[in-house]
Length: 79
Image 1: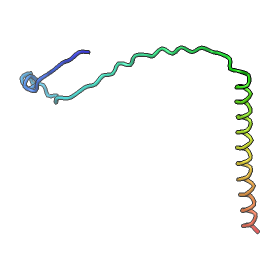
Image 2 (image 1 turned 180 degrees about the vertical axis):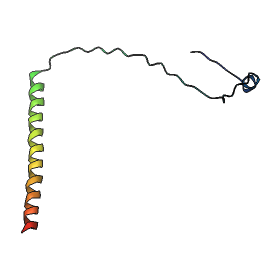
Image 3 (image 1 turned 60 degrees about the vertical axis):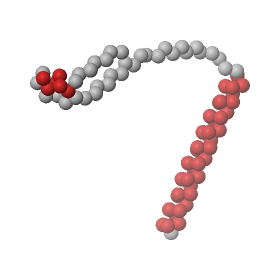
Image 4 (image 1 turned 45 degrees about the vertical axis):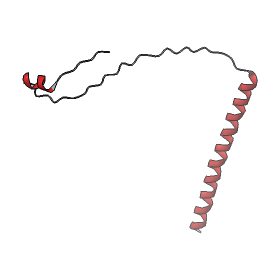
């Protein structure tokens, strides 16, 4: 870390037209990430697979229900 101080009198004596200010510089140091691939228990894989399939079924049933309800309301308004 370096420090640098300039007094306002020094700036006016040098004929500088700049106003005093503050400049902040950040140095980003890269982090090291160690990634090790390991196999999980087969039951964990099966549980994740079942949860994904269940989520897909729930999402499809919600979208289908909304579409059917909307179509029924539009059919009522047309009649």
